[in-house]
Length: 265
Image 1 (spheres, helix red, strand yellow):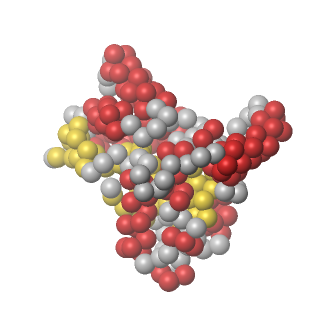
Image 2 (image 1 turned 60 degrees about the vertical axis):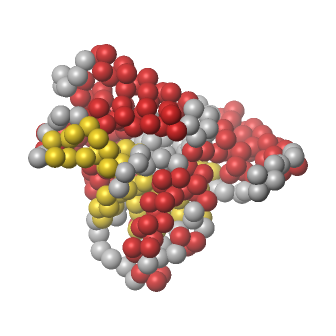
């Protein structure tokens, strides 16, 4: 993990931070998919290469529970994605891809929420499995404070295809913001976190103010059960808006009254 921040420091004892997931929370879709598309169009690899990556991406996202095997498979695919390429070259291409694909796919509603935090003097950090270089670019372009992302190994200005540390996913995100809070001397109980995915529940549970944006089914159930605010910026969802809150609360109620395993087991 690498930390890069933009903007001025605040009083550490009173500082509040808002953490935002990227894919499907800030962005309509997958950052890595956009990177893959742009790099394929520029002749960086073959259809077979990108097909293997997309398959790993889909398997990873469709896994209903934490599955280390799928996470490792996706992690390896993400590393191979940029292996052997020059860092400066990828950075330049990343800027082009941001303008061409990423920027038009950003949820304005999410940006508005982030800007509201910034207007109050609060920091805004991206927390994502996306390569940290792209996460940093997005944070800088949007005027956010900084980014936490997955770090790829570099030797002599070339990506080696290996990863430094773990993929920033699930509990790794929670650990990353805890580390940041220790470095910055602020209390996570005063902070906010936003995500679309149930995989990020550890991240959401780490702060005092969890929020759901465009939530998947499992996160929506949890959000309504625990009265977490829910934002949904997706189109063609009038029916869901009508029945979603009721269905979510019913599901949450059922989860409360259903038998639970003993916590010690």
